[in-house]
Length: 297
Image (cartoon, one colour):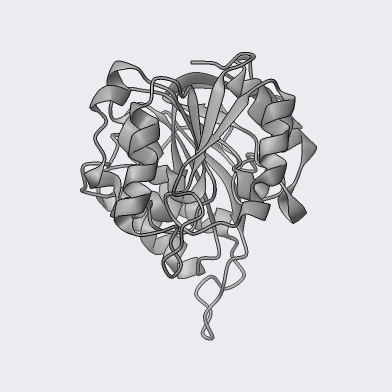
């Protein structure tokens, strides 16, 4: 799946509401790439924190999934709400004629659900992060390269906790909190023999521990090809400290210490200024030297 000049990318919202001003820079960027932009008719609806009712958000995405004239769908923003509509969506037409689904954070619900059909999705920035303080030219360029089907090559600094071994495999994952919330559901993805990517923001340290332990107890971490950890930002501590000066990365590393697969920290994706695009359910390769890890897809 890749876009070309005059391909059509649609924007819809499946979780928190969004204002028109928050997507205009993204629209200009997409059009500068030669893409046509379509907005969901319900895009700017609002019900409390949501982008309209569950029914409106479902219809907004369903119409785009079924429209053969749409080549890609990028979700406007995250927040919370996609899990409330996922079971009301019909993917029959989408499976017959797949299109790119892009976004991150709460969009992990869609990634995991669609990856279960053995179809690729794009973990990427979204219109809400293509402007303002989150805007980053390298992030935007990575989205362009991914959408247009160019080869992806990134490098990032080694971390002292890395257990670096060269590895190749199918990449899956997304936001840790969302993956945790999908355990046991129809959207829960089998991670066996895959490279798992996780990231998160704004959690308590003990929440990170609880989610990692839950994934471990559910057998989700024992048969990975590798674990890749992106941004773990703005974490919170209790009045009586849980972490005792341990980092989020150290908590995660302790959970998987007994396994001998590679673990890579510092991957430049997640809720941070540099949020590089990667394909889920697509083969990737990690190699390294003393200073850097190299990612290719």
